[in-house]
Amino acid sequence: QTIEDAKAQYRADRDPNNVTLARRALVHFCVDPDLVAMTTKLEGESTRFLPFNQGTGGAGQPGRAGNPPSTVGHRTAYLWQDVWHRDSWLDILARFIHVDVPEKGSKAAKAKNRVTIFPRFHQWDVVRKLEADAKLSGAGRNYLIQHSAGSGKSNTIAWISHRLANLHDASDHKVFDKVVVITDRIVFDQQLQETIYQFEHAKGVVEKIDQNSDQLAKALTGEQAKVIITTLQKFPFVTDKVGDLPDR
Image (cartoon, rainbow, N blue to C red; front, side):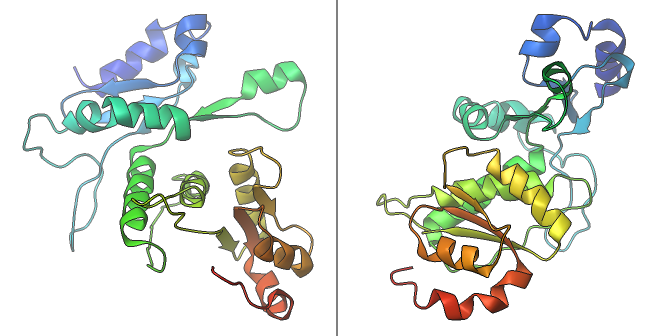
């Protein structure tokens, strides 16, 4: 059997109204020796599965769907050896998985349409790699993360922002004083603001710059805000208002 058989079983033979299976389970995986897929919401025949694969290709090689050959057994061995490893799994439960609840609608409609967000493999992988390198190398390095359309870049940015905002090095010194997320599209900026903000509800920790450059200057010079989300258009007007940022 393949993951397609598992998908068919979930869609046809698993009751989406079963409380334990459909509402209390955080994620469902379909696994065979070569491929992995996952879903967080059972909806009968409409259940949508997302790939949870590493991808193939490497340095100088074109990337393709699927998984590369494994030196330790099945191509999908990374799932139970890395992702399901106790420390990794607890980290996913604590700092990745979250519930996205619609802002509009009745209480019943919000409960019905809420979506559990579980990281896809490429998201989980890049957040952990970037955090590990920043912890070792400190501030001042550049990274490029390539995301295709619809592959969850807003969530990736949100996870990375919160990770770096709370990151400490081996000596327990804070690596970054603030994390500034800059976009060049207002629509994407609003989407990012909501995504990042829902990860942290402590007042003032996430500052959404939705007014003017004065608000941005105050957030940059203040002590409370850890993550600042703004558009590129506000930056040319903030330089004269900020002055020096000592020890940052």
